[in-house]
Length: 136
Length: 445
Image (cartoon, rainbow over the protein chains, first blue to last red):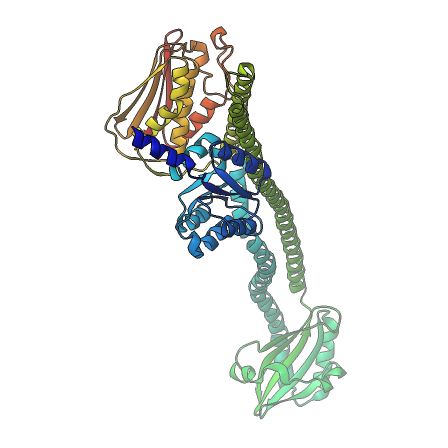
């Protein structure tokens, strides 16, 4: 009994996981941020791919959630860039989009993402479940 | 619009065909018809004219031949004869006597002084020498006198080693008549051909206009398509945000502190769901009407799809105390559209849950011949018999006291029926008002 309590305490002391969220729609980005923070994660967010990459370089990220349609650097290009970086080779990534473009989807899946979701079909609960599945 | 799609197919192929066809017809066909007409006329009348002129010339030559040949040395007698003949015959304008010596043709005498300088070398000397016994050796048309005059040469005979020829300038009335008739015919044919060409051109332009219209309609179709995709995209994003923020709002308020706010938010959530369903339904209806609904056929495990749908809808069934039963059977893998199949089952199961107050809902899936029959049976309020006919029409909703507060678009069954039929199946319903309903549909294996 005591041992499990100690382990539990250890888990509680560990700092919250960092999620990098890249989403260009400010309304949706705010929404996802709030929910993920409520779930206990530390969320770093950006509205474009370039800034997203900078944040990735300067911080320890546990999970990247990125939109595909982004200004300046597309989601696909961002993931490619991260994968080329040693730091990002094994980074857990979830990609999502508004459109179900098969060509883009297969391109992204080939870069080793955990999930490719369609934004309009994902409720906040479902998102929360999915994130929990990969980092907890 | 569906009528136009067939018509526009015909017009499209007609457009391409007519683009090539009409220029060819107008450019090559009409003049070639004219040429053919002329050649045909000339050939058939040529022989007649030939015969008439020949006959006439022969007659004159035969009459004068003895006199001329007997008096061939006497120029005065000859001149007299020739002048008398010309003066007494209105259709003879000129007579000349020629002779051939050493392949050269020379003039003996002529009734007209003009012939002294005339070049007779174009009489076809070879033909003359070869066909000496033929009554006719050369024929040409002389328009100088302002009328049809025929130059005819008739061999007369040989005297002292010289071959004598009579050269006549004739007017042949019968030939004139034929020619006039022929030229009238030609003008008539020309006129008809021009009319025909005009008719073709007018026809072409009428259809060109129609083709233009079709092109415009295609443009409009394309714009509608683009509008549809844009609308779909634009409508979905605010809905997604609405749903998400309501969710956040609900989470920020703890149920113990603000019960009423929570129930308001629940209402907002279900209204948003209604809005979302309506939008999705309207887009589906629009796409089905335009024939633009696409289907992705893959190998589908029907059991799994049914179980997925049951899992999704279980909570709303539980909320009403309804039990969903599903007896899994051995089913072959089906080639169909997984998402659309899910949509159909969701609609039918959703309807059952909506219209059942207590009891259970039974779902079954069985293989029948070349189809799989899926049925959703409930112990709900049932459907009045006169409503069953209208059940699958657009915006139809059962009018019943018990269903006053059931919300819906009235489009679900219409869409479901269209999708079932598009996937190659049929949908049907059995219902007893007050006891329950059974909806079943088939999918080809």
